[in-house]
Length: 361
Image (tube, rainbow, N blue to C red; front, side, top):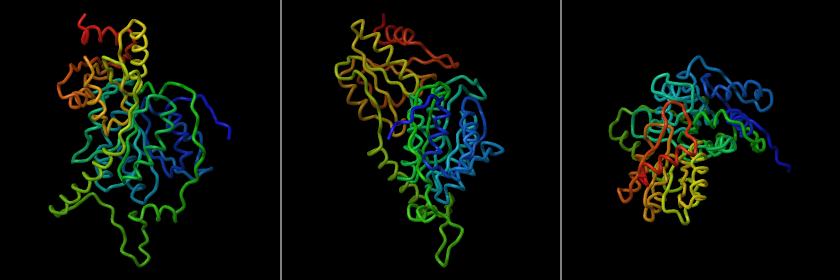
């Protein structure tokens, strides 16, 4: 079968991939720089082809609670927003995690705090990886660096969410959401039938008990002992995810003496900086976390054994660096370089930071 190659934005790729995955429902609200997700879905009109529901809710709070309701019935449902909107969704995301429901949330990050700027950022790292709402919970966090990954991670996010009955978050910076690249779209998958949903999701609320005890979906537990058992079960799931789902990419790590750690679009800029540095004789490698949670602590710890220094590069004031330092445990110097106002650094700036912070020239 011939590949279908198309030129499109990252946000558009998410919309096309959602339709082709067989998503049952999208509930969202427009906000820069991710509004094209909803706009593209409206243009595709999948309710006429696959039966997918596409609804612009009255707010981000409404949209995440619509996702909560859809997920409770075993449907493949999702939403997308940007940083301030994701903040408004945190209560609903905590409820979804506590109810052990699969769902996909897309965050195309913009600068903050507050309304901040419409320009790109990576400053939602803490919110995404530490659980932005209340309680002891995690969701799986995928960080795409290309438009192709924006498309691919929709299916991956849903597959992982259903596998572990937990929400997944696709965390992209505004650069990846807005840039255009060639993308190979996945083949069209049919939406699951109600019979298939009942088989895959026997826990789902159906609204029809048919003589059986109906499933009750709730995040509320008034019995303290039972709540502790629930949390222990959640933690067992998270431990399983940490064992099985860590993803990352490495470049030039076979012989490197120094290491860059970066995610999203910044990893691509770091790779260009590394190629320039290697041409000048500096042996630098790159580790790009693909899953920000679970984080690749183990691999970074292994690489740290042979490093003289590590530079963490982010579009924020220094967030992922905390996880890198936990992995390294003080064995080598770990420094940070970041921009915070929506300005994206170029390879030369990153190398200047490397020279200043690591080589101390």
